[in-house]
Image (cartoon, rainbow, N blue to C red; front, side, top):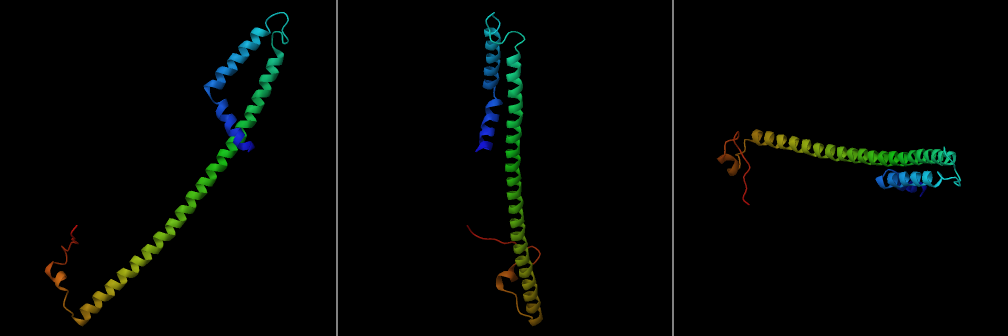
Length: 137
């Protein structure tokens, strides 16, 4: 929950709305304290203290958010890696099946040639080198 809050704060601190509101706040602080009865007379030491604390908090919030984004990126990379491994396993299995089929076809051709069986009628009509697979839609 805290990491999600850090993401939300990072997104809001990285917006023009935040920058505009921050500049407006500093201007109002300076104007309100420029008069004789201001609570933080020039050089605005209290404002400087608040700005330093804000910078320290912003740094911590940005680090928390970056850490969360790194964890998300690592999880996505691991998922991609796992998907690639699974796909490689499937492709290897398909290639093994294909190789077994090629061996079986070669064995069948050898048996047919050994027994001197006639070729099927459809295969006899077309020359072997120019054979194409045709079908009707």
